[in-house]
Image 1: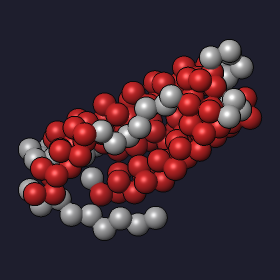
Image 2 (image 1 turned 180 degrees about the vertical axis):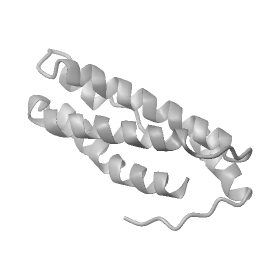
Image 3 (image 1 turned 120 degrees about the vertical axis):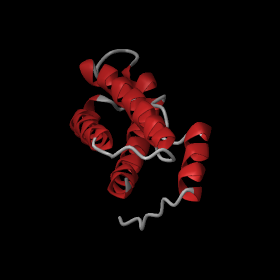
Length: 120
């Protein structure tokens, strides 16, 4: 599970940059980065599928999968037509990875012994 957190930490600032580009109305210029983030999200989702069952970590894994799938689906919609009239607004509204449910499930996993040294 710990290497997945490193992947997420690498993706999160890129999502922030994409949201900001969308807010600025600049989507077409971000097409390459958009595709790269979509690919990296898929890799991370596949890695999550490979995480062994762990009762205290299952909820965290479930929340991560849901969040990353939602973000990837959202970005795929923008990547399908980055020149559309709504692409910038849609990109700016990209969901965030962290949620209250994720925070609670992370706390439960940590209480059960999850401990990761995060590297950047």
